Image (cartoon, rainbow, N blue to C red; front, side, top):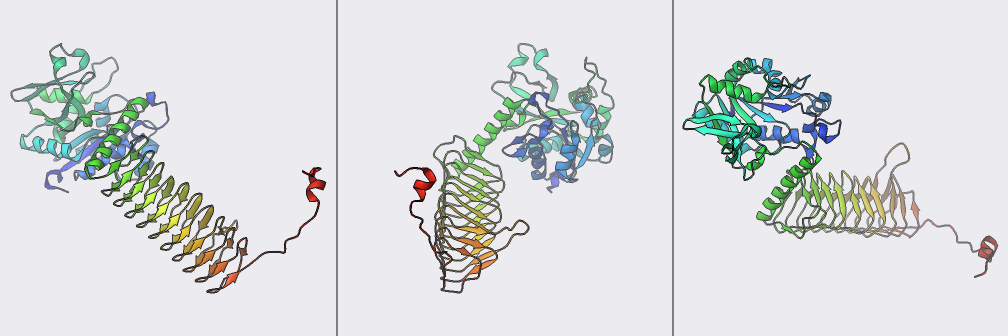
Length: 462
């Protein structure tokens, strides 16, 4: 925790229902690049050094509470009566922190960042503000509350509908995020009187109260205008995803990653990609995926929580929770399931599935093969149609294949079974016993030919 945030805490407002989303999911739980918007706000706090966080829940609060799993304090807003009322739900929690500054964030505005949070807090403390409003300047500020300034700081916030023609020309707008001195916030919240027809308590009313009591109010203009963005409906959510997606792609291009086409490309915020790597169309990189340098990923790959080495090529591959080493070539139409380790120089061709298995260096698995719960050595060759029969309906069993083994086409390896080094299996064999090093396993019945069968069965000669 940095010195500047040592005496800071945060309240995140996450009670939104999002009726226009037409879903039973609380609005802050809708995802941007695979991460709930609430998590974006929480991570902005944590990256700034703020660990003391209270989340105000509301609609279907159990979903958020289960997601947070007790990591953060939560309070429940049973009635949606405005942003000020939401903060009031955390009053007991705030009273235990009267010597701190509190950051108020919206749980459905995902693009707040560390630089803005710390910059606003620094201003807040240096100028002795009772409240510091986080603002941004927009080319098209229509629909947002405008910030009115005088010589000493901020003297008002005017909503769009109440603004004069001149005030509507102001480009600085309210993001809905604030730094407050906790004791000043508590006092102001206690003085809010709802005067609107909805009977709601607005957090901006506490700002007006502090204005009136001659406390210092100022605004910090963020260099990141996206901090104001939120989503009220599915169209807004798509805009957030596109904004985040474009930002990550632009950042990666600056770092030396090439994109041949960005159609359908989605890259999560925790993904890292090495320089010289080429990302093709339809690629989705999720979770804590790490892609090495000088790779070619795509087209049409999904890679989630995987580590991929350097100089590796993936073509129409789905890979999850696995490690893929250097100089590997995989695809098309390959499924790498969790717990797999594909070592250097491996070649995997079309319609192959690997599950919870280690594939040794320079092994070749060309096509139409399933390998599950197996340890495969170096330079093994798999013929078409090989299958490890690793499950008997109750338990999973392991297969071990030694270095240099040759697995013939249509071999069934019935686990548990061991294939020795440099051993062979004949095409069409079902292997139920261990094969010694260098041995050949053949399991075939005699072929029988029945003359005239087709004429009798199908009633024709040609």
